[in-house]
Structures are given as C-alpha cells and as structure tokens.
Image 1 (tube, rainbow, N blue to C red):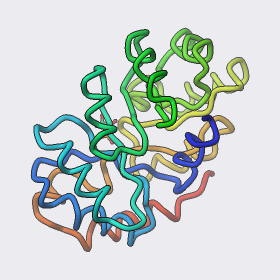
Image 2: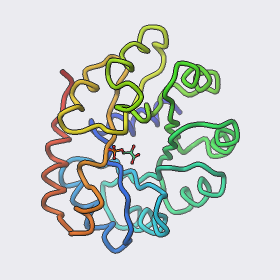
Image 3: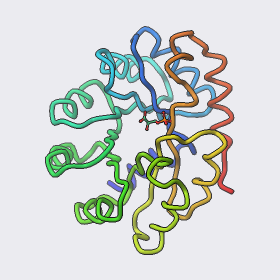
Image 4: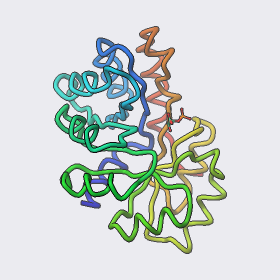
Amino acid sequence: NIKKTEAIMTAAPVIPVLIVEDPAKAVPMAEALVRGGLPVIEITLRTERALEAIKLVADNVEGAIPGAGTVMTAAQYEKAISAGSQFIVSPGATPTLLDIADAFADVPLLPGAATASEVMYLLERGYERLKFFPAEQAGGAAYLKSLSSPLAAAKFCPTGGVSLDKAPTYLGLPNVLCVGGSWIADAKAIANEDWAGIEERARAAAALTGR
Ligand code: 3PG
C-alpha cells in the first residue's frame, strides 16, 4: 500500500487543504485546482457538508483525486470512504484510528506525526508515508531535516503554515515528497468563487521544486 500512498503524494508537489462550507462550490473549485495542475484535493471534515463536497468532486470532476482530511474517528473514516475519498488524512494517529485504517487497507492513510516517538510508533504500525503536522509550528524544515537521518524510512508531507515561499525548502529535503497547505484555495477565495485566482495559485504550486 505504500505505492498507493506514494502515488497520492507524488501526483503533484502540493496537496491543497480545503475547508468547504458550501458543497455547491466544491465542483468549480476542484475543476480550477485540476486545471492548475493539482489533482490531489484534501477536503477537511471540518464543515457540516464536507462529505457532500467530497462526493460531488468524486462524481463530477474528471482527473480529480479527492480525499478527506481531519479524519479522527471510525464513523468519519467510513463516511469519508463511502463519499468517494481516495485517501484519508489525519492530524495525528491513535491506536483506534489505525485499527479502523487496517479495515480499509486499500484506501491510503496519511497519518500525522510531529515527534520522533510519533514517527517511530507509525513506523511500527507499518506507516512510512506520513504528514508532518503542524509543520511550521512544530519546528519547520530544519526540524524535519534532522529526522531524516535517524528515521530515514519515513517520508513526509509537511502541512501547517506552509506557503508558496516556504514550500521549496521543504521540497528540497530528502524526507519530503510533497507539502500541503490552504494558501491555494482558502475559505475566502472559495466563498468569493475566485476560480481564476485558485487556478493561478494552483499553477504556481504545481511548478514548485525543491531548493
Ligand atoms: C490545516 O490545519 O488546516 C492544514 O494543516 C493547513 O494548514 P495551513 O492553513 O496553515 O496551510
């Protein structure tokens, strides 16, 4: 399953993290992201209608790879997959969550970790592809780089406080496959239906490389 997870992480250099209040905006939003070159789309379960948004994207947006973010419970896990999520992201990992994930092993989970012990626990549970969260606040690229030698098997998607300017430093690390962030399509851009702006920021994000 590491191959499946890695396919999600390497489809583009950036995974846009989205908070969608109005499902009616989900399809044009996802189309703008796909046009801009970001097919992998993480819709967080932080709004009441997030699952509807995932389903609409899964059913209607060609080329999109929708997933659910902020998944923390078994119920959310099941609903997210029923809605058409092709991957699951969580801010952290508990034994309970990982037990649920084992029951849906064909859908990749990107579990969050921010410390060496958390990474070691996830490695023990068979996870080598992780979300580093909250990236900037937990210590940023310098911190993550220092995990790369002792915990070489773990490769990350840093998320949290990452911006267009900060992304290249992360992408240049040996233990980073992609980054995540909300800057491409924040709540305001979605509410304002700024599809052109979202596409433009997606295009810039899709062109990012490490430095
Ligand atoms: C989040 O917590 O919403 C994600 O990690 C994205 O963080 P960001 O808004 O700082 O990019």
